[in-house]
Structure formats: structure tokens, C-alpha cells
Image (cartoon, rainbow, N blue to C red; front, side, top):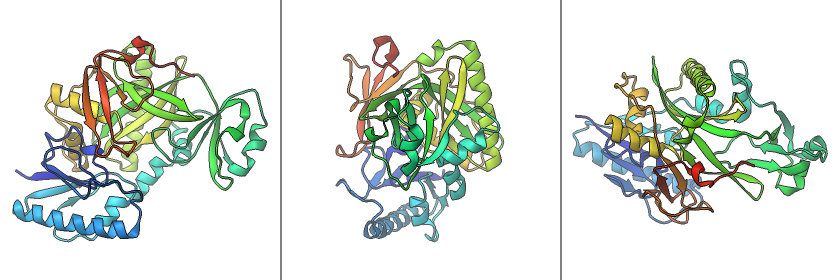
Length: 369
């Protein structure tokens, strides 16, 4: 049976997918089955030319040794990573590398400005305007309203700011950069995960996102999959309809595999916000539940999609769990269990995630602004 290795920069996508992957090659260790890592020391600049050259040599050496070990009956799966790993591996010869989606597709989906303009033709989006940094103060004009100011890319809240009462001086702005500006609306942020196949797609349980504001910047701190069941049937049906339209849109663009979609619920209306064409922070919990309930995992479903195979009979309809990042400010006691999701404690993305078998909202942990 063909072996499958995960090959990437970050080890996070491999977390809790070890029942499918036979191993992984990553920069940092993740403590899972068959992991081969470059270093346990924190690298401050992974775009450095010298580092990239050395890491490529490491990849070439390890993939060839693994291929020899399994008599070439092994595949190396790349994930969507904004050029880095794909570019490093594009000229490696005699190794079975399964590439991710086309770079132009990933760039489109990651560009919040462009993608909202396209999606606006099929789904409602929040009204916004693109403004260059040097004109932001003039545009906001010290109003009595709150605004969301957002850069065109970023994840986990990175590059998304809350400007209170139009006071742009509260945040650091690059005068040459363009920003999306929209009025802040009281909302509930939700996230859906889809797996897009060549002909079909899977819709996995959605979650309510836990968003906090530190120093006027939005920060993702966890997810609650159980609270989504508190919404009205009208909202849930609308969400399902929106996800169907999104899946059709993505198939037209040629996208395959795992993707996250962020929406905002305002009263009983839903607005599209952005795509996350990658594994997300909440993906590890989805993958665990897929293993427990469906004898599969998110890594396997992504592999099936990207290699144009047919999906298994997957019916993961409900998750009654929630989680917080351990670096969140407010942690209440009696957590159910801890899952290590990371590799190096100095890296803010390398944390323990605390899993709860109840809704975080029942504990009054989170209040929307």
C-alpha cells in the first residue's frame, strides 16, 4: 500500500492526522508519528535565502531516503502555503510529489479585496471601501462610529483592526498600503469547513469563532462547535445554502481540498467575509472527531480531494465540543483535555489547545464587542 508523507514548512496541518499520514517532513518537530524535522531551534526569518537553500537540501535528502526505503512506493503531499514549499519542491526529480492548488487560485482566495468583489455577485458581503493609508484619517473624519480596518491578507485576525470613533491614530497605519474599511456591526462570527472534490464536496460542522480585541486588533482565540446548534433553523438553512454556492464557486475556480469560510451573522442575515484556503486552527478538532466517528481524518479527506478520488461515506454532522488556545487571557478551570498543537514555545502559533465538552458561551467566557 502506498505510503503518504506530509511535506511542508509548518507542522500544524499534520497535527491529529497521524492515523493517515505515515510521516511528515517539517521545519520544527510536532511529536507525531514519523515526523522528520529540520530543527528544534526557533528561526526568526524563514524567508531568508540561506535558510531556504539549506531547507531545500534537507527536503531533497530526506525524500530520497524515504523513497528508497519504500522502493519508491511513497507520495509526498504538499499543502497550500503561499508559494514557499511548492517553489522549493518544483524541480525535485524522481520523487512522487502531490502538488496543491494552483498558485494563482490561492492568491485570489487569500486576497480579501479581490475575493469579496467576486463573491459579491453571488452572496451578500459587508459594505466596504478600499482606502489608501494616507487618506484614512480624512476618510474616517473622526466620526462617532466604530470601523473595521483590514489589510488584504492575513489570518487569525492579523492585519484586522478596530478603530473606535474614527480615531485612526489608535492603530499603526502604513500610508502606502491600501485597506478595506467598513462600519463595525455587532455580529456573531462563524466558520465553515468544506472539502472540495472534483465532482462533489463535503460540508463539515461549523463553529462560532471566539474573537477578542487586544490593542485594537482582532485575535482569534478558539472555536465553539456546540453553540452553532443554538441558531434558528432559518440561519442554519441559509448557511447551508451559502456553503453550497461557495462550493460551486470554488469548483469553477478549480480549487480542491480543505478550505475554511468566514461569515458574519447579523440578526438573521449572513455576510461572507473571507476564505482560508488551508487547514485552520479549528481543523485539529474536526480531524479528531472524524477519527472518532468516521474512521477518517481531515488530512485523508484533503488527500482524496486533491488526487481526484471519490469521498468515503462521511457523515460528521455534529460536534458538541469547544476549545481555547492556552495563551488566551481568560481560561476557566476543569478543562476536559489538552491537545498539544505545535512545536516551539516561543512561536505564538505553537500552543496547547484546551478542549471542552460543553459550550464556552455557557460559561460567559466571551462577550462580543
